[in-house]
Length: 295
Image 1 (tube, helix red, strand yellow):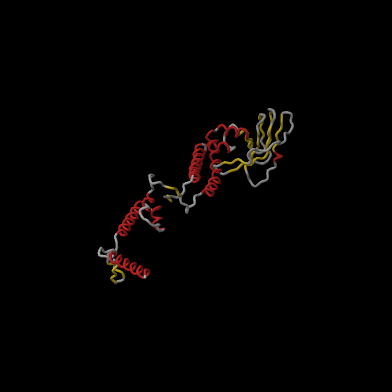
Image 2 (cartoon, helix red, strand yellow; image 1 turned 90 degrees about the horizontal axis):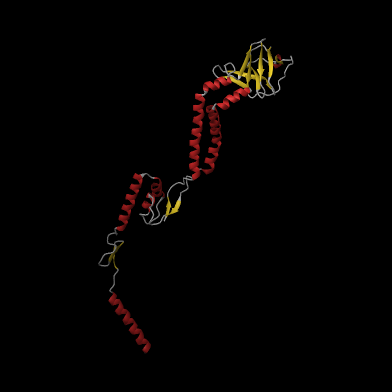
């Protein structure tokens, strides 16, 4: 007996659901992490706030001296506006009076103030191979900020919650195409049925138990109700099949009367013959044939 029981719940379909659960998990973590670390993140990205990586603030036509260390990236930022900034008007002069030209690229193109919506653009960047004392002269016509970008990166790396949130966010974004592709390739066919052989000694499913009650091929309505119906529909179908079997088991009236009379199209036909008389007639015919042959 075959069991055409259910839509195939393949391992790949289950894997899709697991991937969806993972996606939800990895999207919740950064939301919580960024919420908890929002103040620290705001401090890092806003050069106007006090932080060890925010080294110096200079107004227009103001200068200041500072010691810069090797293997650190230092960048001058100015607030974004429509005016063109002439970065040559920002001078970095060493102890010997020599100007040090920008020699590197900034890590961050812009920093931002999420509270006020202001942005700060990188103007000039330096990378030193040894410790140096310098004087910075500002003549660009607006305030500038000297930021140690390497210090910002170090602060982020030391913040486990922030790092975990960033990685979790990236993971959730990577899972989106994986989930879509995996589901499209491995989605189950809704028209497919899982067919298997069921032995007599094995426990049979409900719809197989219903279908085997009738000695004929079920129609599509009965098959659908047996496979996809709820318990009420299956019980109702089972009762219908039992009633149909009981009805078929009752013979039609007068089909096989004990007196040998059959009713057929309102005509009475005597079906039974006297077997003994038939036997005698056959014996007499054989006797006559032997007489003719013997002459």
